[in-house]
Amino acid sequence: MKIACENCLTIYEAPDEKVNANELIECPVCQYVFINKRKIEVPPDDTEKSAAVVDAGVERDYGKTMYGEVDETGKVKQAEVQVTEGRLKAIPEDKELFVVISDSSGMEIKHQIKTSECIIGRGEGSDIIINDPETSRKHCAIDIYENKFVIRDLESTNGTYINDTRIKEDLLKEGDRIRIGNTLLTFVVKSI
Image 1 (cartoon, rainbow, N blue to C red):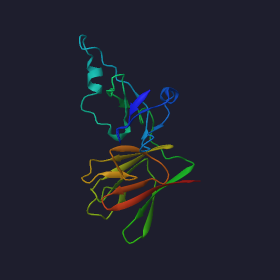
Image 2 (image 1 turned 30 degrees about the horizontal axis):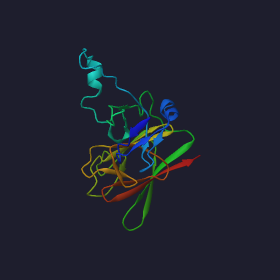
Image 3 (image 1 turned 45 degrees about the horizontal axis):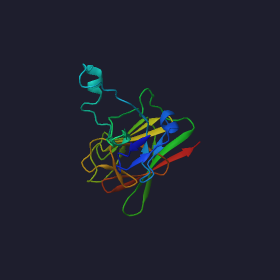
Image 4 (image 1 turned 90 degrees about the vertical axis):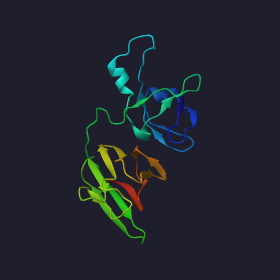
């Protein structure tokens, strides 16, 4: 099946067995990780559309964790992501999660993530406070779904970057570099 990378817009062939098995799919050009989605079925224009089907594609922004199938004419079809649908937030019992903050002087500060939703920003309501004027008060959040780690930008002014790619929402993996404002963080997963 042909799909289009939402990150770099490359159109490439993804193995049908990976798509049908709901496996993660990685873009061969930018290595952006995609999460399989479910199709939004829209009836032909000459039939009555149900409100549920129409609402599924209206005014929803799923960020960078979506991709679209490419039809025979090369157009990208509508797509919706199933990143965390039906999954409960929970810290894995067999792992410790950390964010290591590196400042401009080369000093590193290690923060353990102890909750299933960790807010990072410069405001007092954040779980991890970053002393950087280029960071929003609530800049981004890391959501933990046992062994799935998702980072979301919280509509920050200067954006959230994973490995130098601006994201709205994306999967995190061990060693990913997160940049918010002028601050560099590294996501660390340690087995217990």
